[in-house]
Image (cartoon, rainbow, N blue to C red; front, side, top):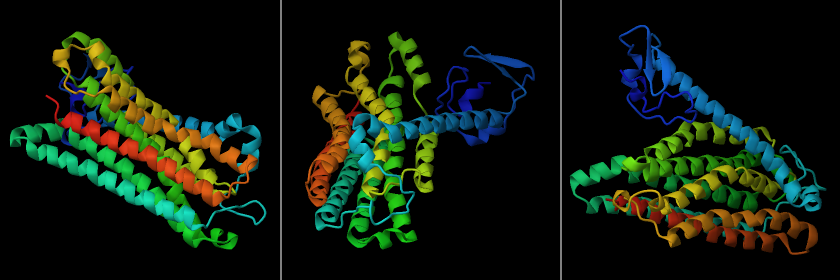
Length: 376
């Protein structure tokens, strides 16, 4: 029997990023021959219960994700100092949720919280648009085609794209409340503010895991699962490199834990979100690469086998939306350090820029979901 079939995993020892999804009832079965079995180049003792193999692979995936999360956390703390050393020293002052009157600054202007609330409305609209369009596309198909499409392509993808917009909405709604109601240093040194701001920064940290899971799903649906007998070796290699959901849970979970512990906290609370945002870089670049691969897949896949058509405009819109917000990292510290622009105006302009970035993300992801829903 194929041990990997009960979880949908390859048993090759070189496959470190594991994609789960299968019947849990099969996990208690034992192989009939109590010696050993060769499966895909791997020798697996046949007396090992499938449940133990599944647990081992799950723990391995999570552990690798946690390890990657530690690396991203360390990088996110040091990168601002590499980018703008002098400005970063004046901006990123550790606080551990203990703020002082001299160094702590938190804008309470309507320019800040009104634009936060505006972003919440836009993110909720985009989340609803992605789900609504996916449901509409499925309704346009016959019942048999709709079931097949939902189970294989669009539903999981749409849910992940929608989840990303909802995570964004969470961070902006919490940010708006914090800017509006926690107006003094004393109020920010309360458990209420710590809880609220942990939710805000934790959402920024978690969004990296969501982006990564979205990218992995795109890789499986747009490249690996496509019918193309001429490129099996390339797809097999990519399949072994694509992280699983458990990997991204470990990645995002580690970053959220660092946020909860106060290791991302600074005297300027807004700085926390920039540090957390840097940790999104690895999954963001992974997603951008997968979108580009899907869009250019015809260069190594027969046209007849291509089932998902993305235009160059779709690719550019998606990648632009995910990379544009990176320019705010140096702009934030340099604006505070070298200019006298009021923080309220800076926040409003940053939120406006983010609205453009995240709108491009939501609209392009909606287009990608639709591309899969109308695939052959």
